[in-house]
Amino acid sequence: MKRIALFFLSIVLVSLTGCYRFFDPQDSIDISKDPPTQNDPNLNPDLLSEPIMTTEVSPADSSGDSALSEPEKDGYWELYNTEIIVPQNEIIGGGSDVLKYEFSSNAKSNSLVAERTSGKDVEEIRTHGSWTEPEQTYFAGHTIRINLSAYIDKFVRKWTNFSGVNVWAYLGSENTSLGSTTSQVLRDSDGEGTCTASISNGEITVGQAIKEVSIQVPEGSADQKMVILIVVSNQGKQGGVKYYYAWKDW
Image 1 (cartoon, rainbow, N blue to C red):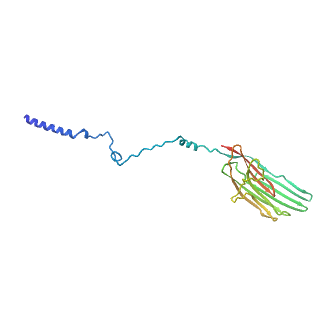
Image 2 (image 1 turned 90 degrees about the vertical axis):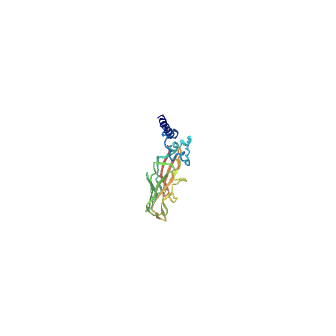
Image 3 (image 1 turned 180 degrees about the vertical axis):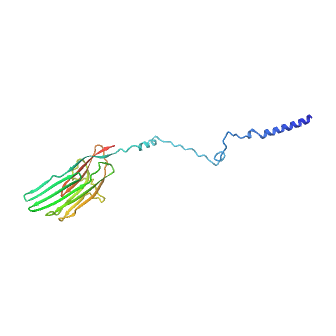
C-alpha cells in the first residue's frame, strides 16, 4: 500500500511542476500598457517621427500689427472762404461815340454786356462764363474736377470782327492774383485748359462750349493755404472767383 501511495504522490508533484512552468510570470502580458499600433516606431522601424519645429517671434515682428493699425499721418484741404471778383463797370468815350461795359456776377457765373453807340448805330455783345463749384474738402492724391462753360449770348454786329469769352482754372496760393496763371492749370483729357466761345470775322463761330477740367490734389502741410482760381475773360475783361482752402492735419 505504501508503494501505491508514493506512486500517486509522485504523479501529483510532476503535474504541479508542469503547470508552474506553463504559467511562467516572465511570459505574462502587462495589461497596464496600451497595445502597440502600426504607427508605433518601436513596432514599425521604417516609420520615423518628425522633429517638432518651434518659431521665435522677435519684438520687432510682434509690433507689426499695431503699427499697421495706426492711421496715416496726413490730412486734407478744407474750404474756409470764397471771393467773387467782378470787374468794374466802364464807360469809354463820350458824345456821339460811347462804349459801355456792364458786369454782373453770382456764385457760379460772370457776365458782361458790351454796348457801343456811335450816332444812330448800336452794337451789342453779351457773353458769360460759368463753372461748377468745387467741393468743401479735398484729400491729397484725390482729384479736383470742375466743369467750365463759355457762351456768346447775343451779338448784334456793327464794327467788331473778333471777340469772345475764355474760362480756365488753376491752383495758386493766397498771393496769386486772378489771371496770372501758374503751372498748375486744370486740364481736360486732351490736355487743354481753356474753354472758349468765340466771334471770328464778324460772326459767331463757337456759340457755346463746355469742358470738364481736373488736376490731382497736392499734399499740404501745417498752416499751408491753397487757392482754386477760376477766371472768366469776357471780351478781354477778367473776373472770376477764388476758393480758399486751409490744410488740416488729422
